[in-house]
Image: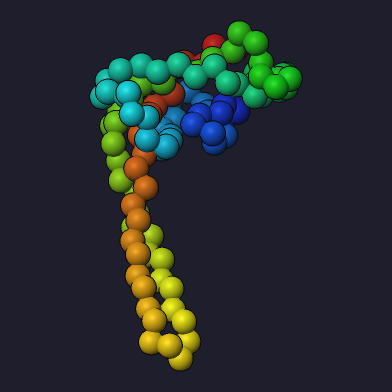
Length: 105
């Protein structure tokens, strides 16, 4: 059984026991549970239910493993030819690591 759930504006395929890295959730604490109710699709052993826009009564229960995980550094380099202009910026996205504990369809 799996579901497609919207978390922080992104869609994830969620299965029981799977770890997800979602955009940073400010109010999350390590060990706490979070429920997401924006379930867009439910696949229960081949029986697919598509929400309009969400499936009513369905939710995903997650446990926070780590409230703040930094992603890989992304370097953004700007250059203008023949002008001697160069600029280098770096960015590390912040994530929250969660594990799927239960799927209620």
